[in-house]
Length: 120
Length: 111
Picture: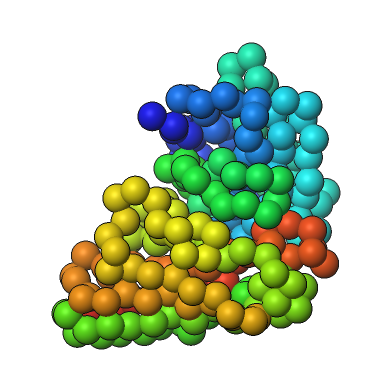
């Protein structure tokens, strides 16, 4: 079964750093792009960026460029999303999802989501 | 403000048929890029409902159908059931943004 399993919920203070993870299994991890999607409370889905695990080629949405960093460790089939200095406005649910093709395809499957809460 | 426009909400009684529209522009749907649909049940992650306009993954009932024309796409659900109550999102690719774009989502209420 193709599966993406994300790390657990996080509660952080403004200014702290954070790295959340997304572990893929059941398929060739290096052959598919992984995307990250933000969903703020009660809102829609926002594409943050995509990364190709084989060579770490990364493409960021203009809205998130410079705000987050995506990376992978293909030896453990895991993708990461990290922040160097969190803001309260980063509080949201974050999903990883496998992308069928570079940018133009569909996302399937999705991870279960990681809830990030940033509060002083 | 989402790149693709969906109605915020639709509703229907059990057994009825509803449609959800997804309107784009000449840089995404109108440029010929495919449209994909997702269903998000309350408190869960989105799940792929349709890919490449009207292809259903295994397990998705044929009560659901998708179409695309010009700068728009539509999702139709016939024979509404209580379990269909969810948020529905469309997605395409935008060549100006060089990446995937989503609709704002439509909340389906089964009366």
